[in-house]
Image (cartoon, one colour):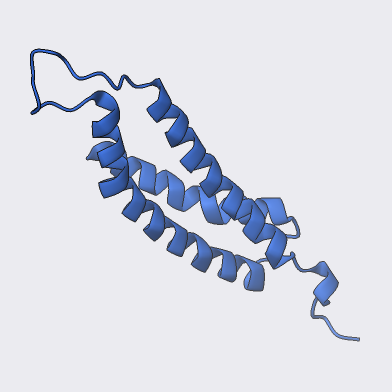
Length: 114
């Protein structure tokens, strides 16, 4: 009789990854919904120099948010690998959410501070 946990008591890595991916898809979809609420009209008095609110937010998303999300995804994947292999958490939802939410919150705070 061994004291080690059998493989049936460990969390499933695939379902945890799907939960993690769901969090990132939710962030991208919510940014797209945010973009759809912004005005795409350029003020008439500006001419060609001014940009609309939507284009400024889109440029921010492409230049700042995309690299930040990529770094957060790398950290999330590393956290997922550690949590799946070493944690005694049995829920895939908890493991996937823990590995996704913490880097996304840090990424959000950094993006808001810019």
